[in-house]
Image (cartoon, rainbow, N blue to C red; front, side):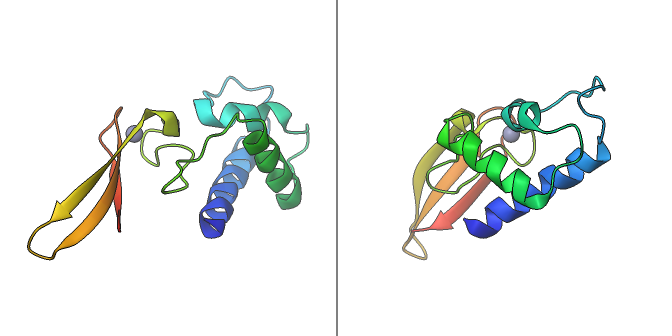
Length: 114
Ligand SMILES: [Zn+2]
């Protein structure tokens, strides 16, 4: 979870730096990033500021991580985690149970062994 959050924050940082003038540009911001972007200061924020912003957005319920996988948005199409579908799958040959998460919008999926 921590690694994922750091990865996500790094992604937001590089995205924000790429679009350093995000507030003045008409870049299409992914839905899930809006709460963070709207709080960004005029200057590119520091990593610590971004972590604070991320946590604030989590606390306010503006970002909702998937409870099982921690994704706040689909890695492929950026749909919010509320558009995920989660189900269990049983592999009879290996006798393993898997938890599968799937994005209803684009079909991306991930799984974890139970
Ligand atoms: Zn998707």
